[in-house]
Image 1 (cartoon, rainbow, N blue to C red):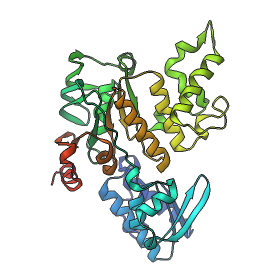
Image 2: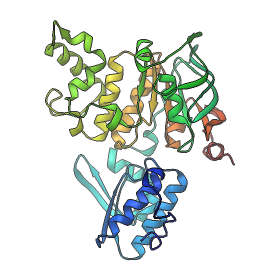
Image 3: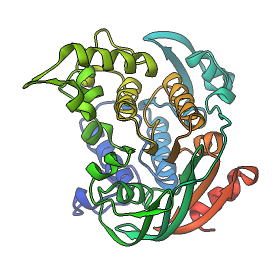
Image 4: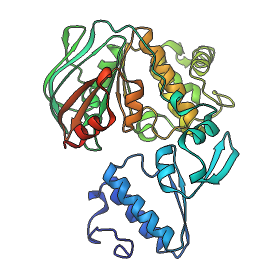
Amino acid sequence: MLKEWEIDIAPSTMVSELSMGARQLVEIARELSTGGKVIILDEPTSSLTYKEIDHLFTVLRLLRDKGYVVIFISHRLNEVSNLVDQVTVLRDGEKMATAETRSLDVDQICRLIACRDMSELFPKTEATIRDVALEVKNLSGEGFRGISFQVHWGEILGIAGLVGAGRSELIRAIYGVNEKFGGEIHLEGQRIDIASPTEAIERRIGLLTEDRGAEGTFPDLSVAKNLIVLKMEEVIKGLFLNNQGIRQKADSLVKKLGIITYDPYVQIVSELSGGNQQKTVLGRLIGSRPRILLLDEPTRGVDIASKTEIHRFMGQFVREGGAIVMVSSELDELLGVSDRILVLHEGNFGGFFERNTFEKESILRCMMNV
C-alpha cells in the first residue's frame, strides 16, 4: 500500500516515531485501503514542513490522476490556488461561488470569503516603539540553544523557522512551561526567574498556546467560564461563583473580541468555530490584563475574517503600550504584522531582520540555512 502511493516509510516503523507529515500520509494510505474513491482533508498542512507539504501534494495529485476525488479544505489560499482544480467558497455557512481555480486568483477568493482584499488580511498597525520590555540572553532549553533577543513596548516581534526549529519550545520556556538549561530573562531591565506559568501570569505575561484544543480551552465549560478562568478570584462570592460578576466580565470580552456565540453562558466552547475558540482564548488572556503576550500560531486554523480581527486586536494591544512575541508558520503573516523577525534554524539563532529589510526569499533562505 505504501509503495502504491509512493510513500517512503518502512511498514514496521512505530507511528509515534513519525513526523506529522508522515503520519498524515499513513492515514491517507489506510483510508484508501477501504476501497473508497473520495478522500476529504481538513486543514492537512497546518503542522507540516514545506518539504512535507510538497510530498503530500505529490500524493494528492497522484490520487487525482488515478481517478480519485480529493476534497481539500484549507484557509491557506496560496495552497488552494496551487493544488486544486475547482474551488467552492463558503462564507457564514453559505456558498458564495464555485469556479475553476484558473478563473479565480487569490485576491478574488479572499474577497469572496471575507469581503476584503488580500492586502487587508495582514494589517500593520503603527505603534510607538519604546524601551525594552523583555530581554532574553543566551537562553537554552530542550529544542533550542543560546538564543538572545529583545522585544520593546509597542513592538510585535515575529519568530520564523521551519517545523522543529525550536520556536514553540523557546516561548514555552520563557513562560515557565518548559525547562530552561541556561541563560537569563530580564523584564524591564531586571533579571527574573519564571519557573511556572503562575509566576508568568503574576508578572503579567500571557501565553497563547499552539494547541488550543488540548491546552488552550476547557472544552466542556461554557464560553463565559473559559473567558474568566484566569480571574476566578474576582468572581467568587463567599464559597460560590458570582454569576453576575461572570456575566459582566464575559459580556465585555465577548464584545471586545467579537466572539460569535448564541449564548456565552450556555454554549460550551467546543461548539464554537475555530476562529471563535481562538478569540475566546485570546479574550481570557486579555481579561488577565497582561503587558506582554507570547502568541504561538495565533491564527492557525481560523477563517480569514477571524484572522484579520485577531491581527487588528494585536495592533491595538501594542498601540496601547503592550509587547508581543509571535510565532507563526505563515511567512506572509510575519511579514505583514511584525516590526522585526527573529529566525531560528534547528534550535539555533539564524538571523534578525528589521522591517525595512524584510524580503521573503532572504528570510526563507535563512530559515532553511541555504
